[in-house]
Image: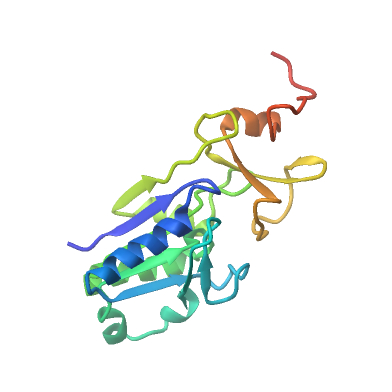
Length: 196
């Protein structure tokens, strides 16, 4: 039975690399793969998925496939969505229709929460309706599990601003909850204003 899957993790947990590896594994077994992402993510080009470790693949746009007919969508053996946090609730519901009506598994990868630890709309909807939810783990500089996506600049952690700001390793870092709260980006940084 086809399922809707959500693999979430903090930045740097290899979600995009995992998406491309799963696509490769399906193709290696002669399966037809629809690899896509939302139109919001334009960091590496509109129709390109690229991982931090250098893997890269062409893809379709979720915004467009939501208008494809059922026959075309049903010709695929699997749909893999990268950066699913940027999807709308309606797009996530559409993906669930692919699973329920066409019996095609849909595997989504994305962030759970933003730089303020608030759910993204796409992630929230996935958490509400997914058949299976799995965490792709990464770690903080201290060695503990990272669950927070900290946005930062030369002054330290940024606590306010627009939910979506496309960035890379020089603007975001995955931290454990403790160091996110403290605003501590690395072990040598002094923490000001917190008491033990």
